[in-house]
Image (cartoon, rainbow, N blue to C red; front, side):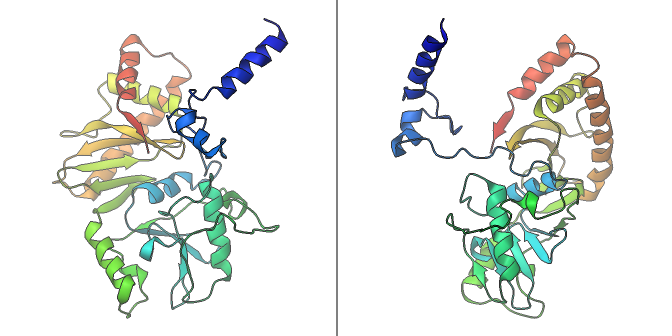
Length: 307
């Protein structure tokens, strides 16, 4: 086939409204961005890539109900959820918060977060940023979170039992804040951090370990499969590997746990599992998977989903 013919065929494929939409929605182009007359800017698949705090940021954004962490190198506090799901606010006592579990306003979560950080830097007590405007004028300021923090800095997450930290000590909520606080406290799932980006969550009928992992997905799946085939993927009696989900470009494996045991009792088994996983990861590049391990990997693939 000549180059001209190949280019012509590619143009036909690009113009085909029945092709999958490049935004990754899974819909056909004509039923997705084709309705708007063209493809919009595609979402950044891994918005926090390159930062040591990537895994903890993903956990705080996706499944930690009530947590805070000081943003390294700033006087700002990252928070899972703020009153009325605000993007940022400054408490009456001057403490500045930036929310993580907010509506995405652009194709890049890191850019939205950076814009909220820039707003909070200059905000005054009582100021609230409800949402990050798509028309935010950053001027010559950095556009992404990676440009605002030391990418080698870690994130020290503090998990809370409720949302009383929304209010300065000694103050009482009122109006919409009081209603929002009540709703948030009623919906919270008991959660504890038992390791780096590893969280115990009591979901009611059972408890889970949700662990955001930084490794490339293919390597991680191969290592998990190697452990599964060897019968070493659990955390002890009464536990099982439940599956995994993808969040912001990383894989989050999930284990079912006995909820009768306290969260702290799972810290050591999780650490031991982490050591086994590191060993398996190191072996992945050295020896290929066996037939049994490949079958395990196929089974693990069937238990994946994307948030």
